[in-house]
Length: 441
Image (cartoon, rainbow, N blue to C red):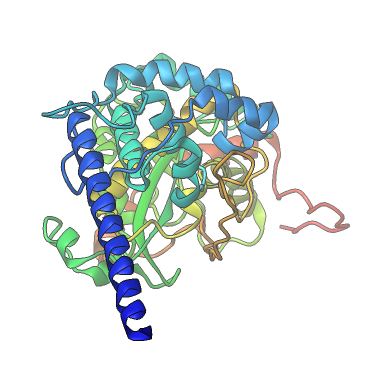
């Protein structure tokens, strides 16, 4: 009797399990049918997400946090958005059905890109905006392309002599001894990257060792840049490996060829560079080994103007925190060069709109937990030491090639500056603050 009751219970249990399995199968089939009607195929991995309008994100931030997160006020964001929209890619249409979660607005792509430029983590950014993780990088590169295509944001060293004279007048106003001939300051900076992959180097034709900077102990690119008195970038080159000397970067650049052309620079104008360059009719450099006298005084006042390019690099890295750490390994050399150019253009855009310095940059600049869906994402990032260190190395340039320039004497810009100091009666550099002595003749 007990055995019979046990068999009946097992049969009832089996029937219940079969009914449950059938119900689940019917539910799955119905769900797949509904997805097919929406344009989704069987097995689709689309996750239902709710797009968060950028206006909602901005309202949660407030004015102060907005500027900290985007490195510009909201009014400037919308101005930039208007400039870039005509140059951003159109959303791709699906062959069947519609996008399940809706198209991502161009303003949202710009928002994600600026947050990534400022140092935000994609793991935080995609949740705040309600998009897939990969869409963060899609927005970044669409924004980079739009910036590089936007004619309003383009930068180039001015060929018009009146524009050059305005820059020289700006430097003269900043000089305590009225140096009149400076039309720009030039120097190099390391753009920190991971070790390039063999695949990304195949089109370049250079091995990975050339991208390793022995002085900084990091892989990267040598960014060669010229700035004006407002610390805006006039010309940049980011196409040489990190181990390339500043001298070789400059002498193989397009701007070097233009400077050598007769009449390109207005009379009496030149660039101010460090000892990685050589003294030429269009370049004034410091004297080597001078520790006293008028040559040392010239070095001091020359450096007080040339430091503007160091400050421009500092502002660039402070504003765009993505440069304070190694760029992701999946970013190729070509993409790195385009990214750096876009960041320099945005740097100029901010200065042109009276936003010279970013506020509140922090080492752990993540996209906070202030917005719904956000979470604290702590990343231990190492900051590069001596990131803006000036270069004075000629490892890849024979000494004989430089002697051709160094033998040039006479009425070069550097000698004109020294004569100007002599006319002013300046014979020594000023004493350091707090010091009671000066360097004597």
